[in-house]
Image (cartoon, rainbow, N blue to C red; front, side, top):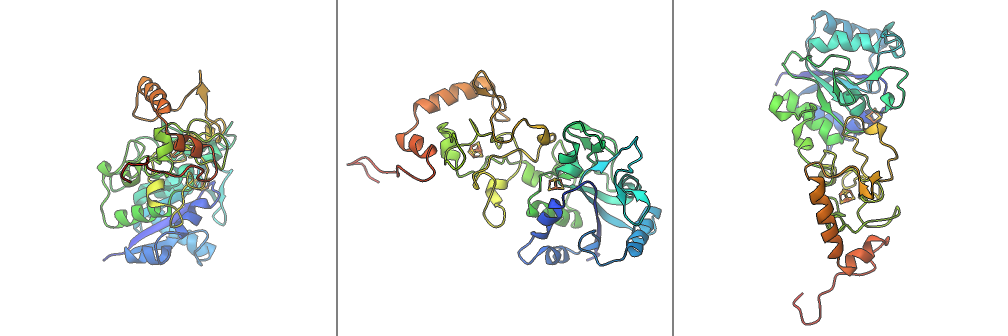
Length: 333
Ligand code: SF4
Ligand code: SF4
């Protein structure tokens, strides 16, 4: 198999996406890459190449002398001040990350945004955004970003957005493996360029609190077992991701750890007013499940609450099971 060369750059980043990537694969990320014939040309944190050697790689790719399978960017691109990109220089090159991204992206067969910062601007774009941070092809939900809405890589695809803050290690590894195998086309991506193998799920799917959700039996404080949507800000019914199905670090997820989903796979998630509180209008959560009309949700919620079993109601507001499931006497278990 020919090797599939990838180049990983870091813009305005916390490094969390690299940390996630390094968790990929049962035998470690490097073995996983090797298994799929992926050659990591350079990565700012894990490569041993000197600055001169790294710059030589960038220049060979930019000039067209060296082919690039995928350009992977972690972190937002800082376009300021005044469009110069000089808020984020790539050390040793005398040029900005903005320069390198725009020079290298058109040369790559595929361009990949690793994480919501690179995809949509993410955390560096929050607030008044004084650095003019942006994602590669989106600024929050607005198409355009650094490369422009019409950008297509050499293989004819828009930027592939492995959204998430950080993305699941498996999302990174599986996307790169699929690219190396030539198994990604436009139909494999959703409307925001996110790979559908994880974006066709909601983070809510598979949550261990689903029974509480069905009966609208809610936690009112952290550490309680009930659903976190009504009071504690959970946005998993509106956020794509298979977080509660494939598990993190072998088994965890935000909601299984007791923390609300903050919809980190969604463009603009960083602008949320309070991650641990549910925004409401007239007592009804503002953010309702993606594909359910509001009137239905309100009607179903009222019906569910009226039918909540005592066990579910009591356990929802406790930090351990206080009422175990039992059959009525005389009824078959
Ligand atoms: S997406 Fe999240 S984890 Fe990745 S660089 Fe941005 S802030 Fe860090
Ligand atoms: S806590 Fe969140 S993910 Fe879990 S059932 Fe409730 S809404 Fe769904």
